[in-house]
Length: 375
Image (cartoon, helix red, strand yellow):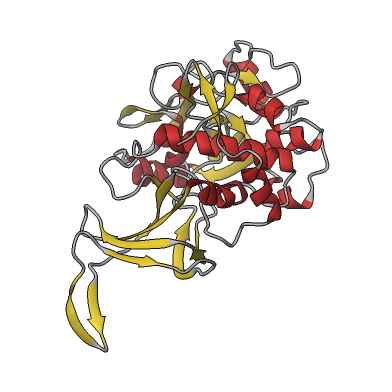
C-alpha cells in the first residue's frame, strides 16, 4: 500500500521559472519529483505542532516521491507519496522517540497503521492526500526520526491491524490521559465506540466511578498510582519532555482570561464574572463550561474548544478545575490531549515495566483483536 501524506500548505500561488524567466503558473495537477532510492529532499521552514504549545518551524527530509500541488484555496501544498510501512517507520518515532522501549514502538506502530486505514481520506475529504502529517492526524517528520528500533518495530508488526467485529479500529491516542482514559463519544461524535471506552489507567483497568464536582476537584488536585503518573516513577531521558503533563496549573488575571475568551472563542461581553464547569466526561474532562459575564451566560464545548478558549495555543487538557484567588484565575489540570484510546506515556511506562505490545493494546483498546491484513 502507498499513501500520500501532506506536510505543509504555503501562502502563495506557484510560478514556475527556468533560468530566471517565468514559464507559467503551476497547474492544479501539480509537479511530481521522484527521488532516487536512498536520497531525500530537504524542505525548509516546515510548521509542526500547529496551534499547540510546541509549534515551531524546522527543516525536514522526505524520501520517495514529492508532489507540489495547488489546494482548494489556491495555495501551495506538498505531499509525500511513499509505501505505508516506510511511513510508519517515521510515525512511530515522530509520535514518540526512537529510543523508547521496543514494545511501546510496536504498539504505536500498530495503532498508527490501524488509524491510517480507518481514517484515510476521511479527515481531509476531497483533498489531494490521504492523511496530514501533523497532530491533526498523525505526526510524520520524514526520515530524520528513523532509527534501527523504529524499523524493527515496524518490520516485526508488518501487516498487523487492530480490529473489532470485523472492522479495522480507528485507534486514537494522546500523550497523557491524566489517569483515566476518556470515552470516544465525549470528545467527538456522540456515538459510543466499544473499543474506545472510559477506563482507569492502572493495573486494575476498572471502570471509572461517577464523581460529584467536589470529588472531581479532589481528583484533579491529587496524584494516584496510574501508568501515566510521571511524578511516581523516574522518567527516563527519552521522555524527559513529559515532566509536568500529569498535573499542571495555569494562572492568569481576570482581564487576561476575558481577553482570551473574546479573541479565541469569539464571545462579546464587557466584564467576566465567573467560569463554571458544565458536565464532565468519565475522565473528568469538561464537556462544556459556562462563561458568566455582564451580557449573560455563554456555553463553550466540547473539550478542544474549551482548551482553545483559555490559551493562546491550547490548554494541555480539559480535565480542569477553576479556582479564583481574587482577580487571579488558577486553572488546575491533569493530562495532555483528548485522553481517548492509548495513553502514550502510560503505554511507555507499561513497556518499561515489561508489558508486551499486545498487553498494551488490549489495555487501551478493550475488546479489540490483532489481525494480519494485506492492503
